[in-house]
Image (cartoon, rainbow, N blue to C red; front, side):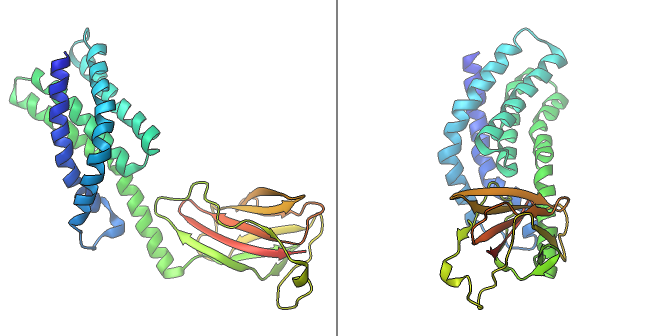
Length: 294
């Protein structure tokens, strides 16, 4: 069995290297975000170099044991049950590996799943003698390719729509009120990332120097325990956001999360004069504002 699996692995590695050259082109086709942009040939060489150096060892260390395991599990099975189990062992292991190694990132995860389908195809192909059977088996990686890239296409379409909206309308304007009285705030940052933000914190709160507390050139607002600071947005993406309000109390940084459904923050007791940090988040958008309070 090991000799057969080595042959399967060798053939799959060849297909993998060929696929590396094609993968940036395939992703370019599915990338609505870059539609109309010229494809850069050097993208393929960078992609091939990177995934050859890092991808080949990972595949050899993971895919070969998986295909051996699949052979051991299915050794006493026959017919459709054996094919189904063999398929799900290969594909399931690829999905698990993509979640662990690539955190489920769609474009890389799709490549891992397609390579798993290639391993499965070469493992099953010799069992078929008819042209129809061989053709259907050879189409498995193609079908898996299109199915696995559906999330990529959906994601890229959403990104393209959001980019068009940003170009038309820009980022929404935050409206912050203290006890229903609107105040002026400074926008520190507004950014967009097509792959999204994860635990991404930019600005920390800081204590205000005593020398500026009475300086009229600074907008410093008086707040007291129990006051309500509310947040809303007046254009564009006014819903489905969360906001992290970060403040200092007793020398320790605290954070409280509000949202479009619960947009009020209650001022705690004994808050020193400081610049509060408010970071407004969507899946792929982020804004950061500051409120100086005393």
